[in-house]
Image (cartoon, rainbow over all chains, first blue to last red; front, side, top):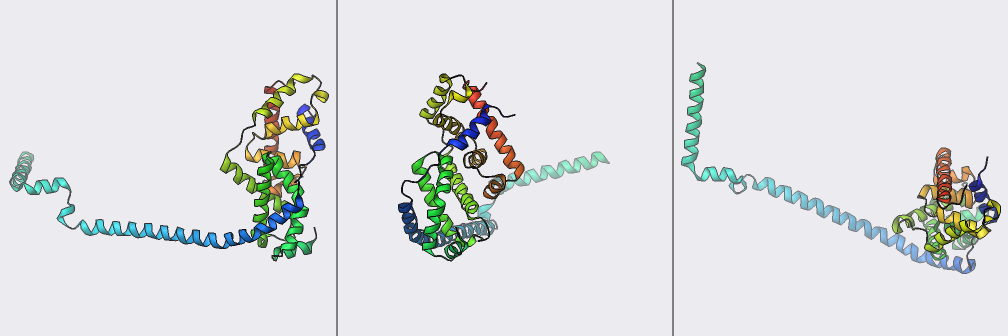
Length: 114
Length: 182
């Protein structure tokens, strides 16, 4: 059964006068006049956009590749060694004493096991 | 609209396109106008619709109904407009109309005049989501059947039915909230 809202909607459909353009002829001329502008725009713009997009994308890829290459290449040199390793290497006496202590500890452990 | 004119338009004949603009602008303008509720915006969107029709004319299948194809383009243009400008809220004047309606009469049949009805329902429809608003406009304001709406919107019959139902429920709820429906 239809309620009041359904009745409203039906009446709305029946009674509403469809909106129309004031000057359909002028509007049609205007639209046809705009076709030339839209044609130029539709031909030139996508080409420029695609070119610019491709350029930006390839630049980004090249930069990423260069950056990766720099990191991999430089990591073979001592300059890129982690800071704590450099620190250890700069104090060889301490490093040797640490190694000696470690060896002693291992020896002690072995003797304890036996 | 005869097939020859459509084929010529498809092949790039501007005079045929002009004839098509003259013949198809009333239903297209009515749909866009009912959708956006702003005459200036509707005229701009109608122009955009025709430009897009012209740019995509080679995609048009002459065996297909031109109006549903054009309306599908118009619906997409309207969707883009809503996305760009956000869902516009009903103006203060429209809200006033809604509230004034409730004060007038108690008889449902005499309560609203034709224009007040239109203002009341449209103000609520204007706040609906895109799909509900689209389906409601095409079905209840423009009078298209389910097959045509399916062709225009790409929605299945079930989706059309559920969106229309949801739209009507929202309208009922809104009318009830302002104390109109009993």
